[in-house]
Image (tube, rainbow, N blue to C red; front, side, top):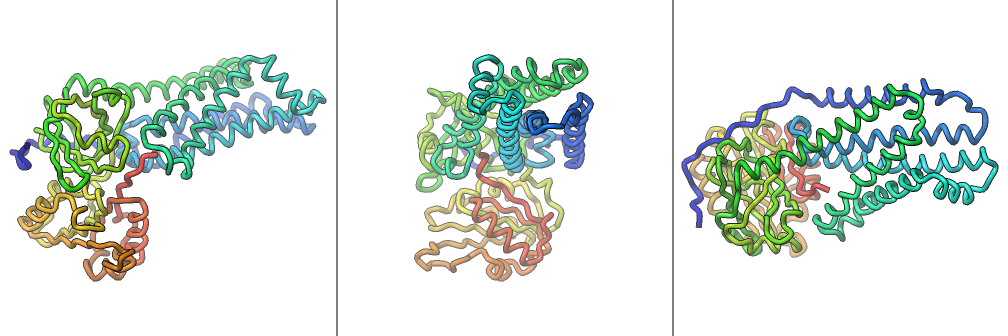
Length: 458
């Protein structure tokens, strides 16, 4: 078994980006206005004299904006360190999801309005127009196939589908979005009204696609390959922490040069069987020390069960680090950490890295059973040595072992009377995070002092 305390060699702190949230918004808005402006310059508002031409114009504009949003959502999830530091990958994933739905509705609207417009202009039925477009224009058929793939991705991203799909299955299906966007680009390049007669517009759109592709290569695909050759990570030890919970220790070369902070996570791929194809988002569960990284995995079925018995020596490919859930968010001298279940993992690392004076850090750890408490020995030792407080809130609500809302405003105030003066870091299931956030706002904790880590990246 690997030792749990080592001589610390602090890895370099990630360089802070000068990019701000407002900068990102301005870039997105300006490009959107340029695209709409080019459509107007090409006569988009001219000739709107009949229902057919109005329908066609509406379809054209929806296609342009929808295609642009498709590129925006790719950039949001390109793993850019600039965006990650400003927003954090979980928040970017939420925006990616909603931008994707908006993109899909616009592209579906484009198909409907354009088909209806041409049917009205040609004086034929919609069914005949559909057959004509699909049989006489190959690139329309190609775009239809691309749209069908995007619809598939959207359906599998709906909440009702996510409850039934494993992360891995959802991830595989999500890759079809790239093919769908590529097919749409081919359609746009050949018969798009902004491409046929205007070289400037053609160059502008090609530049948008090229920049998006460059960001994907530079940040999503390139870094994991570079890390694999540089650090050559492998599984060094697997340690049982609790029933159905193991910690996986990963070693490698020059880990002291890996810029990771407590609270961040990697996308881990274990290179055995088809594991190279299946990324797993897990936080580091101990502060980086330059010698090894530790991730802690709870058996939730599927690959998390397989990882419980991962063999020592298995090569590991890590992508990251990602996440803004770090000590850099701290703005107050006093800190409250609130963990739910396996959500303790990033907080366990933060406990080790944060250095407030004695009495200024409190941990509340919520679990249904004592057997579900992970790292209790480590936590108790760290908290006692540093003069900090820990409150374990243990029990099942359905069996009346704890209050029906054990982390509501009243209970939080009782445990931490000065909570409004603290930075609060919350990690756990989404439902717990939302409930705790609501309780903290009731206690007049400023929203800027509430920091959370979501354990869902879909």
